[in-house]
Image 1 (cartoon, helix red, strand yellow):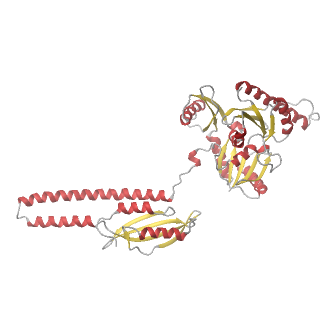
Image 2 (cartoon, helix red, strand yellow; image 1 turned 90 degrees about the horizontal axis):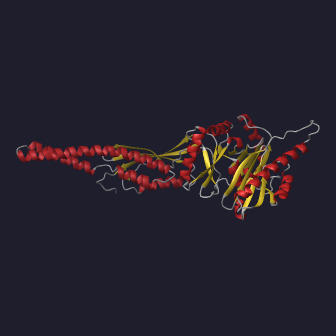
Image 3 (tube, one colour; image 1 turned 180 degrees about the vertical axis):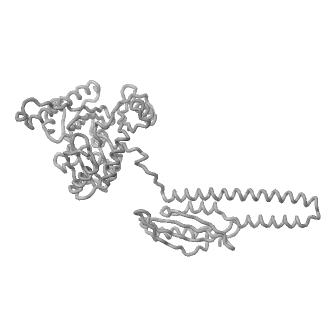
Length: 477
């Protein structure tokens, strides 16, 4: 399965394509993503670079589409904390059901601290519609924080006290401070616009870059200066830099001199593309895909459609049929009770009227009828229980009908199974026939009929077989 990871933070689009553990390509595009046409063009270029079309997409949304707030609460289960935070966000935004996710932070004094990230449902639906129009499924929507947590989850074991991660975009800096077990601090600070002075010929690219790097250095120093007194027991041992495309090497040297700590550039792609630090968050998402993946902001009702296993469907269908037959059985039992009451009444009259021979014969006929009904009653409950317990998982009971023949009842079963089950069609068919061969109530079945049927893109095999049903009071063999 080929996955495309897209980071929309900053004024560019960063992409990474992976297949399993292999990174196929990583590339930055200087463009925006406003329409399905823009996305289709991007997908075409990415497919050409990767050598294949992505099957699924995963998205990091821009920082200005994520509202972040901190909550300090008494110790309680996470579910209860989520309810309190939900009420807080709903009160602040006026939304009845805000779409948010909680990330536990390091406790503060006697309070539990939670960082709440809110991405509106309107934003989520807009991206889902955009990717649907471009004919590629969008499997996850997450944030820069969750991407960085995934990216640097592998370094937690080597932390003795604290590490700092500075993820630098063209318009903001995200600072993440980690201990071996907790998130100590997180904040995002906007980078101010660089106002150039003088004529255009005086201001070249190098000067603009130097000014931007100075502004970034000043912001990081300010964040670090506020962190030190707030966390005196967690001094920073190492600083990781990621995100910025150009000039980050010079920034690393300046930070090392200013902070007197080890400063390194993140290289989570194992050096595959040169300068892999801009793709740290995307590499983290790719590395953790399928095992402890980051928080997904696509609502659960959209992300997880109802899926029922064939056995579950068979049991549900069997339960409905059982309820139907139970209702019929209850009505029949009521009729039997009425007849028995009538028999008792007739017996009283016979005791009083010895000459009522006709009534006596009628009573005898009724009793014989009841006895015959009891002996020839069809054991539907037993049949349905047997099918529910023994029907193979790969076979779905699609229909069940019963008709009373001259001598015995006939039960018709209609089952379906995928054309390609992975276990072999013969094995699944043999398992189904074995259920009928060893049944205590079904016997002398006709040779089954098989038919092919297409359900959308799925190919199904329909199996139809008619069986004679042994009444409750008779032996099967």
